[in-house]
Length: 105
Image (cartoon, rainbow, N blue to C red; front, side):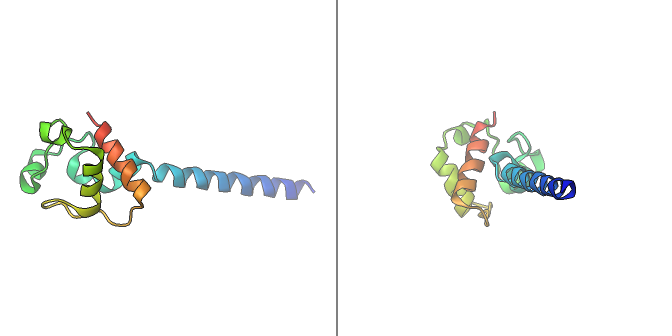
């Protein structure tokens, strides 16, 4: 009986941890780090070489600050200039990563 309860508790713990991990991976910050940070930088400031090559502006640039959340979402979905669209994201994930990008200072 104890072995059955212990096994059930371990399974329940494993499932709850798996759920927490998948939730954490769907957050805007996690998506940004996985799909955007390599070009846009960890804080929204790309390295100078990447900025020049790809035409990436920092989040502190006035033109970027003026972008609405909907415009950032559209850029993630459709791409812009040399940026390709980010595929494989749900609408909720696109919104989450756009909100995270807009929160960078």
